Image (cartoon, rainbow, N blue to C red; front, side):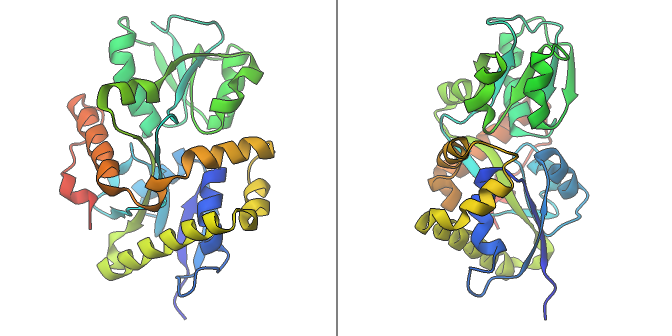
Length: 280
């Protein structure tokens, strides 16, 4: 019997929704997965160390791992109207010299923030602090940091913390490029071989299709890992982050990824990437 594929993704509703069928043996003929849950900053590190077979990582991490991992054309998170937000305690706060909490320095959110801040914060921010994304809003609320860069369901819940949205990174990105926002990527070890990589892509697509065909089948799994999230918020989360690009990146999805990485490389934020390396 073949060894299980070691995979890692976040406990967020979009990931558990997408991978429910595969992780529960509901995709006929699929490799057996051995699942590990981890926040994005951890999975980014796992990929950089080459520790697992299949991972959900940030597109901001991709340039550092493309030699060892191939980008799968499905299963990830791209979209419109789903960008990270910069939150502050006071509306219209000035970030010059301030401390900003971010979920990862190798995240798309961070790249979008740096590209935005280069124009919007002429004095430059002061310090970046990395912390798990669910700790960021309390840290901003309690004055531990001056601003927080938030992702995922924080778009729907930040007002509960009395916070204000200073800027929407997605709005800035879409206004400049007209492209969707590339957030999370699914990567698989190149050493698995091209044939198996194609089979993995079909497995992920089948898992996505199964989730859409029977949304209630994954509901208990989604809510069990959603950190006490309100079910209605979990539903909003899935509706926003699981879309046509999850089933297939397509030409527009690849264009978004290429544009993000090219702009970030031009600013010295990531190594330059050959667009051909994004496909296998």
